[in-house]
Length: 304
View (cartoon, rainbow, N blue to C red):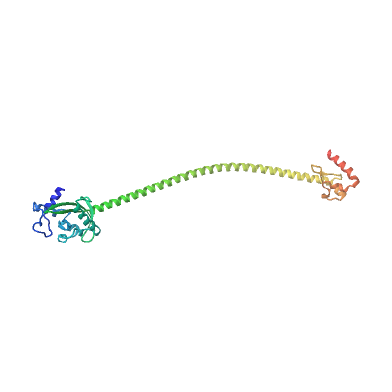
């Protein structure tokens, strides 16, 4: 800070607040013209204030950066360049420093907003310096407009956030695609398993069809055989009935247990109906005194 303070201490300002002859130029005129050139050609704004925060000097860059002509600032409080919300903190901090000598903020490269003449705020980077002359303390500040840097940082931050957002979206999309691929693989496995089951079921169905066709063929053959057998039995029964009905002999037709089914000649002889003849009904046509002997003879004939 010594070299910077030396420049401040030796700089002959462009315009100053009128002061007494003793304090008009408190730091003398050592190489004044050289430092005048440095201040006037500096790209950064340079402002010097006293202990009351009154602006004593400004360089031409102040007007270019903040819109105030030199005569509009010199003699005015420095808070004119501050947003309303920061003015109280500035006065309190300066009073505390003058009373205690303790710094509560760094004096190099501080970022603060400056209120321009048009009422807009621009970000600046400020470095402070302090010097004393004629028993008074003075403060100088170098203010650099960092609007472009802040805009670039903001753009970079926004780009980073957008990039992170796109990366997150890409990651989520990749995860979704992975999940879909997994689900598709699962569905493919299920479809393959189902196809195998269908193929097996188809094989079993074809086998069942073959067995069914074979069983149908066998059934058809059996039905045909039964049909032939039934037809043969029908014809045989018709021939037998014709024979029985044509015979003048007493012919009985019984079942396997010996129960009479029909006695055509007996019915003709006795006048009994078919229902009356069946079973043991035929015996009702015999005289009661002869029934016992007749039944005994009938049983002997069945036994043979």
